[in-house]
Length: 242
Image 1 (cartoon, rainbow, N blue to C red):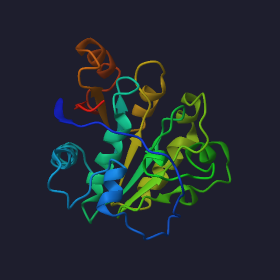
Image 2: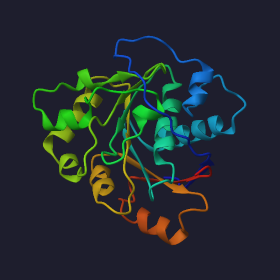
Image 3: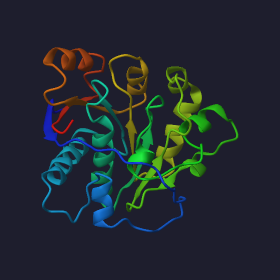
Image 4: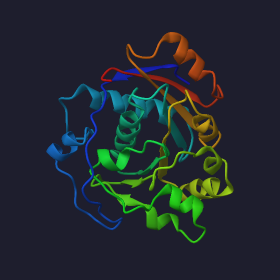
């Protein structure tokens, strides 16, 4: 797999307001997507649109079937959530694919806020802790065609034990097997400071590492990359905007 992926700009975060259920069909306008720092297919001006298209193309060339991609930053603030969200959006440009973005950063979840969504306490952690919870009931419309979000739910101080559980594997298997066109992107926590990213990597087919350009040193990037199986490691995205 390619070890030097193209740089992309960084993110700004928003505040939550409301959430649309899975059945909602309201599409976000270009200005709304820009406000959410999310790319859209018809935007030919922003260079990050082409950058994320290229990243998507590289992943599709390197992996088979409806693969699961883990996107993790080297350190907090490197822009991992921005890259995960926009890489998922770029995959959803393809009308033959359906995409699910799973926010796995249980200590500092951000995707619902960035997308101006405010789930009422229901999300990934609820599924993992409550046996009666159904995966389909936790998927929310993002206002982007073919892209759904599975938010974290209530933030937790611990997460590693959840990610190594049978329920986590069952969730991913269920989401992937129900639709052969589905691609799953997991937005993971930083590699440095906790074992969560390494545990999530065991569940993924592909791992993308995000480094803050001018923020993470070559030594810390190399150390972070060394945590992952070389067969799964797609490369490093240098995020310029952090």
